[in-house]
Image (tube, rainbow, N blue to C red; front, side, top):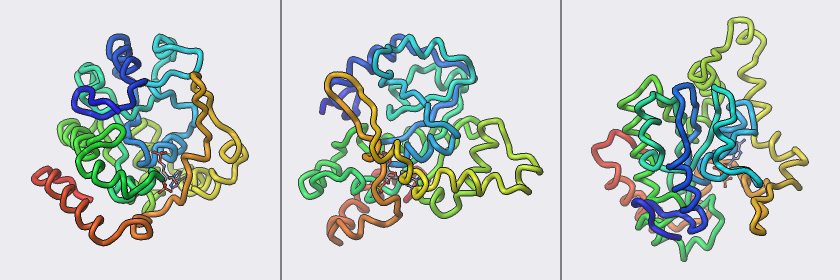
Length: 259
Ligand code: A3P
């Protein structure tokens, strides 16, 4: 990985990010789903009622960033980029952002990598789109500055009160559930449709994938593992957990954000 504008990213992405910064023209009507990898991106996209949410920094195979210009408003886009790497117009034009973050120990464990080797690096901020805490903090501060335009969510609240979050999300996206939809159980239906069990049972998620070109084929199954809160306890020692908790506490100190 390389350090670009204070964030770690894969080398092949740097060119794409620079191109994006030069060409992406945020529109006021845009809705951007922002996450770090392994924080529930796939789930959030499903809940936003579609899987066809283009990643702005990674265009679909055979397309370049100019494709974004051809999408009619309101565009539903997604990104792993930190806020500071999006064009300033994103904030100035008042684009709506839904940010989903996750308890850092679970987010770390979800990466399915050699945990022991990667742990110290993660604690030092070395992770894709990391430092983990800076990414969260930028969007957290933006949500405080623009509360009506930035919805800050946590994976854990999505797990514990999914229907409530679905209502909040629908309202934020400008399509609040009507009384009729409420009484016919639409929120519950959406939650069921996007549940871990349902998504993992779909053939497309068991055997399908996306060809990103350059011999990179990403299987859809990589976006699903356990879908649980607190699974870190099965993979990390108490010492590791305490260390990461300490790091996070110190980094988030005074911000009002905690996990
Ligand atoms: P785990 O590895 O803890 O299971 P992303 O999409 O940002 O890469 O996030 C992947 C994480 O979200 C994985 O976490 C995955 O299992 C979980 N996930 C995916 N779909 C989910 C769903 N419908 N409900 C709950 N968790 C889900």
